[in-house]
Amino acid sequence: VVTQNAVLFTIPCEAVFNRHPYVRRSALVGIGDSKHQRPAICIEPEVSNHVPPRKRFIQELVDIAKANVHTRDIDTFLFHKKFPVDIRHNSKIFREKLAVWATKKLGERPRK
Image 1 (tube, helix red, strand yellow):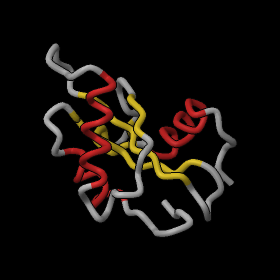
Image 2 (cartoon, helix red, strand yellow):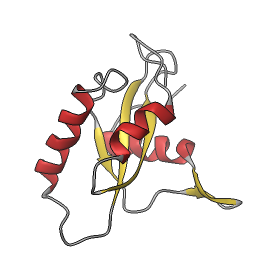
Image 3 (cartoon, one colour):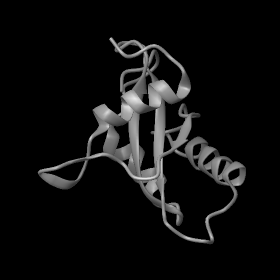
């Protein structure tokens, strides 16, 4: 994801959020113009009755983001029930589809 200030890479950013006990997995996506994207983290939460309320969950993710050099500029978090995956590799997240979904969810223009 290419932002105005940096280039963010999926593995280091996602690893930060994947350590949260109620995050099953996360995915970094870019929203907006391809050279000035807004970074967003999509969260697929663990299926559990103990997941914190959404507002508290987001605040915990914000706190985690601010504490890490790779993620301190990320402040957009979206929750997705089940990430789209590549049918050939069931664990490979289809980030392109997730980015389109995130863009629509945020009501922004599609990426160029």
